[in-house]
Image 1 (cartoon, rainbow, N blue to C red):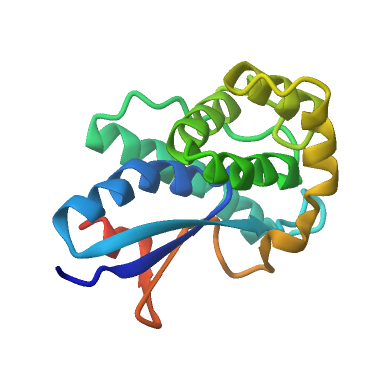
Image 2 (cartoon, one colour):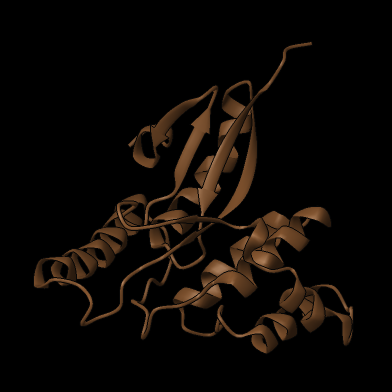
Length: 182
């Protein structure tokens, strides 16, 4: 039996690049001797007015680049830019819960899609709890899980990530486009 290296995928639900990389990253388990491990990674992004004009251009270009990449791949993904800066802790904590339930793939696909259609407020505990209750009927326990799950389990990263997912395997860093063959 071949030992499978763990390929760690650090991602945040507010990153359009993380959404574009999610399904192709899952396919890597079929193509290589790796086991994909999703790790929540909360990006801390400066708000409008806190960034330079050049950073504002980068943000706009990033969304255009993500939409162009999706179109080139033939993805039917809707990627709308956010209306504000989101603290995705509730959605990421929900992802950690989903992972424990063996449902991280289904959960993440739906969260990404609904967020970029602007149909899910990933920063609101009650909105994420309502969404999760449709998947797992946990009733009144769910908001408590999201509120007390806390950001202690989340990986945080300051500026410099440019909203792209990170991949680590055998102590090596791989840019997302490299991992996905782009």
